[in-house]
Image (cartoon, rainbow, N blue to C red; front, side, top):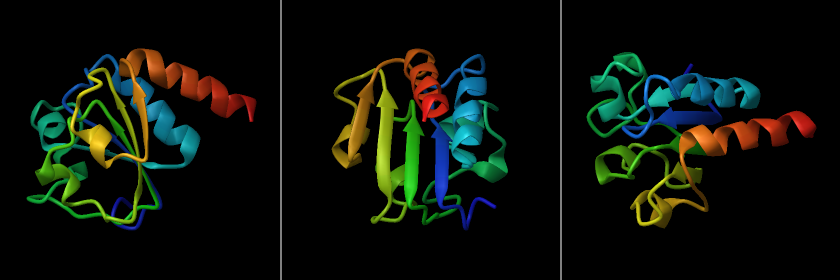
Length: 122
């Protein structure tokens, strides 16, 4: 489950319902658990029991891939400080990039298909 997952892919407020299948495909390709920020869960994009945040659940993954989330303290405060964070966001000034080891600037709809292609090629 989500609490013991080594790899977690999280959808944030910047992930639309139409882009969610891409986030789900990335999670599946990596053998990861899917999660969401409070904003994504409140919009119904991700089920509420999959929310990661200070008011929801804390997690301790090895790899945390953040898709379309700004990187609020309330969200990142629930993620183990030793997790490797990869951020995908269209805003190069998003706070998430200050916490991420790797950052990919671009729309989820553009970045994830390229990641999936690279994963298939390995």
